[in-house]
Image (tube, rainbow, N blue to C red; front, side, top):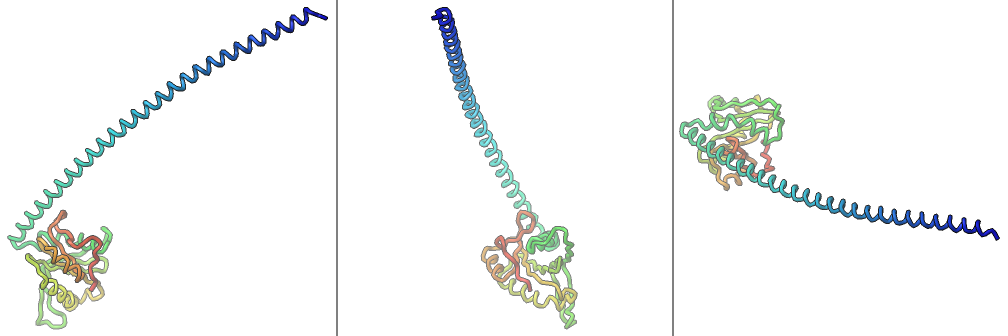
Length: 234
């Protein structure tokens, strides 16, 4: 039996085992260090997320405060504009120029909004128009404001204190309108009653009759009918 050869193999095996143990211990140390580093990394990430959440919450709060301030400023500006428009309306009414100063400048915008017409469509308007009846020259009539755009003609009467009777009279005026304006025979007619302040009962009555109601609002003269209201085409 070759004992030296056996001893050599045993030493080689012991050396391999020692290397394996050393490698295992080194791997364990690396794994432990990696675990520590991963735990620290996770904690850092969690801290970053908490910090980000705090920053986002602070940002949202700042934005909310900013929007609230903007809404308040906008509300105050609208109130101020409304007060100014009403004061202007009172002055125009006292001077007997409500038609020229309030209604006429707004009438093309009103017609476009009411019939969802594009801003680019050309609109012709006229106020205080006197006409003879084309079927009876003995009859004449004055029309407060007329606006024509894209096949529609808006016939507007201006009243300082309108009532239900004025709605009926406006509808009668619309029925006779083509006798005074034969050039608009092929146009669709719309009725509009304009005033400084419109009572809710009058607005409801006019809406049932398909008549637009205008009164002083944010943009000088505004439609008082409920959103989505469509005027009757006569």
